[in-house]
Every structure is written in C-alpha cells, then in structure tokens.
Image 1 (cartoon, rainbow, N blue to C red):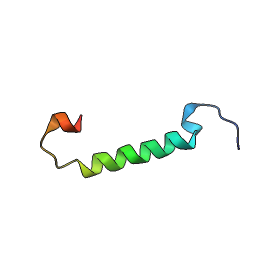
Image 2 (cartoon, rainbow, N blue to C red; image 1 turned 120 degrees about the horizontal axis):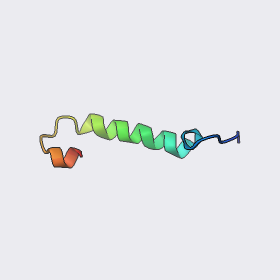
Image 3 (spheres, one colour; image 1 turned 30 degrees about the vertical axis):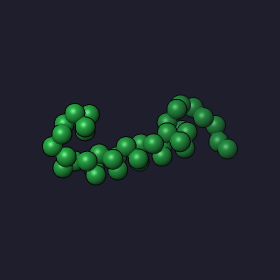
Length: 37
C-alpha cells in the first residue's frame, strides 16, 4: 500500500465519491427537492 498524504488517497473515499455521483445522476429528475438534498 502506498503512502497516504490526505484523505482523498483512501480507496474507500474515492469509491464513496463515485457512489454519490451515481445517486445524483439517478435522482436528477426527482421533483422532491428535499429528497435530493
């Protein structure tokens, strides 16, 4: 495993960012803005 300089280096953080982007894409058409937040 390489050296970790910041939290963005963690694989779990990178995977979480991908998941968040997918959720935003799937819920983009939902009109319930409270749900999207």
